[in-house]
Amino acid sequence: MTLLLVDIGNSRVKWARLDGGALGEQSAAEHTAWSPAEWRAALLADGGVRRVVAASVAGGASLAALDSAAREVTGRGIERVTTQRAAAGVVNGYADPSLLGVDRWLAVIGAYQRVRGPCVVADIGTAATIDVVDGEGRHRGGYIVPGPRLMVASLLRSTSDLESFHAGSPPGGSAGFADNTRDAIERGCRVALAAWIERCVADAASLGGERPRLLVTGGASPEVVSLLRIGHDLVPDLVLRGLAEVAQSLPD
Image (cartoon, rainbow, N blue to C red):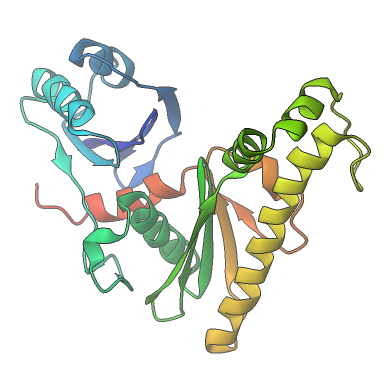
């Protein structure tokens, strides 16, 4: 049976098909204010899907529109996955599990199932998040900071002089220290995030003595991974991989 797996963010949606346990290629698009017909055309036009399994951090309108599209094509509504106390070999580390965003939860599951050992997940998007999992599959918590573009925007919004320099400074491209204000701002924010990730991996290693694997995902991850000085796996579809693990345990 072919399942359609859907990860709905606030502005972007990612999806892939799961057929016989094999996850297909990830697709992505902006989905703001899509109608049921637009959801159907983008995600379900090719046919063959029997069930739709979705995770969402967006509002109810997007889920309702996707649910309507799914009912038209499959005859059944979407099956929504939410954050749980435990799933797919991972135990949630939050005192109130529901407060851990479902995208972070699924990324943690996808990471642990991929490495079967201690790991750190860095998800770099509008926000940048870190989540740590130990060798027994226990989620040990994490951090949230602004992503690279939000860091830059916050700095420019709060400092008028820098905003004027940013507008007039040409982008550089050197691998070292920036030689103009625009690069100093933008590259500085990316370097700060890379250093933060490296620190988190080092701190996570102290939990169990074994250096964890670093997995990086998220739409803004290409802006940061080239600056990392430690080994890492770039896994763009990590959330969908976690969703696939959970979806396969759902009753038909």
